[in-house]
Length: 246
Image (cartoon, rainbow, N blue to C red; front, side, top):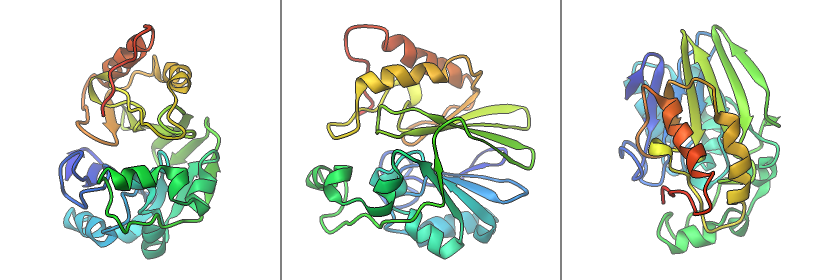
């Protein structure tokens, strides 16, 4: 599903458009002449369906060279192992969450709670994956004419990353579960989801001139994305808890 020039939605579950497994987050593909890029990987239950979605757009999935994870919750990172094995891509994740990707169990990811809540099947197990590159935040990558910056934004999880992408005169933010449409934040009742951390993280996203906002769930924004982030920052200034997307 082509969203804008060079950006495709190739997976999305019940929190979005139901074009892949119901437990998948939004998975985005960014076209690049030096190798395409995926943002997040889905839950890992129907990797072949994601690959077929990519093929249907006329894109060679074997030209995907990089997978940037926003965080390691199962709906975003469970597919990393399978996609790495099938496509041979490099996996990038924050250093704070690299060990969870590498060797986590159910309790560390809050999977036991999520399974009890019916978010994942009862027999679901997180497929561990060896990351290739661990990010600390602040790294800048250049792929052809595209510039990507990793921004460490804990709050939803201990090592959530947002990715600021500048290409063809556009400024885009892939925000994972840090902030979504209407400036809503995403807090969970599990380890790593901390409002005080979010209060420190969100100002990093101020004044970036973001036009297009691509969150991990719900609606994406093709114009005026910075306004949604400004709303989130304003909501965090008050004593009462900000609006939660859950």
